[in-house]
Length: 316
Image (cartoon, rainbow, N blue to C red; front, side):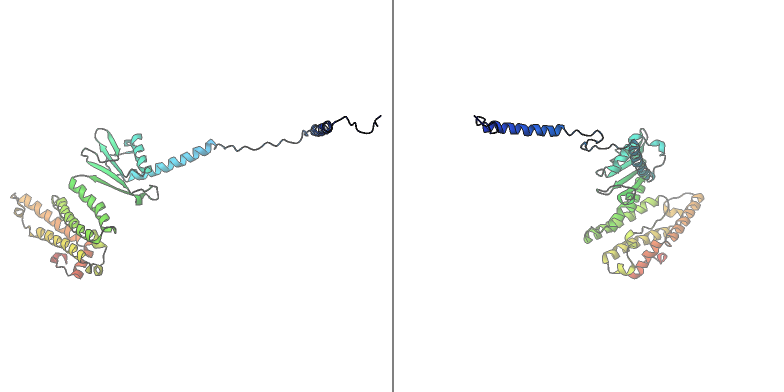
């Protein structure tokens, strides 16, 4: 008879292991179920990154700041448009959008503003096909970003009005000549040769501009103001250019002094025309005298003594 305290040889080891595993699992489940979560302990929930939306007030403020900046920059452009007969009411939403595009788009380098008699104020990126009485232009420096701080250095502006000769002379003296004179990118030989033709052209253009007004204007090259006499002496090309301009001055003054009566001007009118002629001649000589006292001309005549250039006695 088997001892009740001894293990039953009929039970397999596998059944015993199953019982032990089941007991372990039962005890584990009992441990899990026997530890309830206290009600006063908050459950930990993993945080999820959620993008916070900006308050409406912040969005409105940033938009107002940007809009205010755009308006100030736009007004700076408008102030440099020298067009008569243009008011705030002349600007439409379409024209202001065209101006804003020029400000923001670096690929747009030219802006033309003019008044069309049929459509009103026009803002284009190219020269008008028809003839206009006046127009303003703005030229952006290449790849430059226009801001309030860089406005003057990144944009060239000007206007063309009146006759063709008057507008051309203004462009030559105001834009083209300073670019050539102050540029250091030109080869020296090419710049010297071009400067000779440039001065010759502007002297004749100046004569044509003021001759029909009965006035004599002395053209003073910009490069004469860029060099001291002692520096100019060693530059033979500069000496030749200055001498050419001074010779033209001499011819201009001789022409005014040689006109002694209205008949010399090709007019055979009566006494009233003679009186008008002498008044005009007196005003012209007075204008020449005042020009000779200007700093630019005094500097130029100072060069002549150092360069040993013979001048008309009036210039001395």
